[in-house]
Length: 379
Image 1 (tube, rainbow, N blue to C red):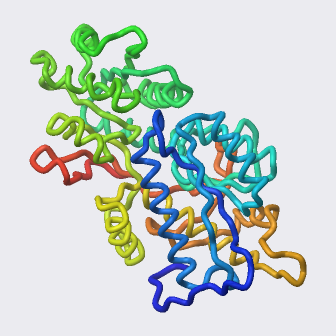
Image 2: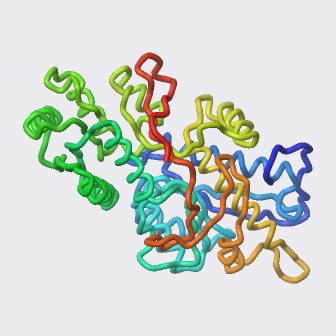
Image 3: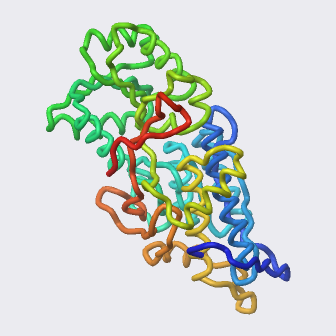
């Protein structure tokens, strides 16, 4: 399915559906809005696939499980979905949670298409069972570091919480910036209150502060404190992980949430498929879709193409495509997605099949019109 659905052909109902598991954070402490966007994309893709005849006449069905940003809950969900007979699993927004899901899927021999998590080490060992649409953290965050350098920032503070993801991001930034004259100053948010962060920024003469922390706490009070401190009127606040993408950020911070550059994975212009999907997602979400919603749609699109290529043959005892066949199909994928042509390959330093690469932008919310995004840098 690489274009618009021109004629609805409902799937035949003479057999069971083909089930796909969906892992998404839908309750706190997960980022609920991000989970809703991933799920909206997946649901829309499944709707479109079924309107176009399903998979060999059989409907696709999503089996949704809430991860709540809990790695143990995600691993248990993968176990349950495997027992329920899903052909594959897709989704997950939080990198540490996706890592737990990927490890369990690899152990069980269950194909997992990760839509939105970026941690380079998604699995500890190379695996044939896992593929990923989102760019690896090292790729996107190096582009962000180049943006910082291009904007004249050399003394960069990171307000960081303890996490494999945040630690990895700090290391990527330092390794990329240090040879180019940049310095990364770490501020441990276990020990600092938001007001104390301001004092540290002044003491270290930082020109940029990056938020490597959760939302709303402590990101919102940190931003509020920095914006209110007259000593820091010229400092740039950034959020490479993408927190300002979501309406919840704008609702929490208002004008203070603008002019905070972040990474998102969209092209400068959407093609015909992306434009159609954007309109449908906007209607489904009753809000502008984030790049995460497009990642969800593309995940559903890719799995449908893989399942179609595998085929189903109840007479031969193959009512659903084999999991091994799905995993073996990752290197043969060639799908026109909402954000470009999707192919998976083996990428140095990445243990899973990787789309190398989705489009990457550094954007912010326009202070004059916070609902509008400004593209500041592309990579």
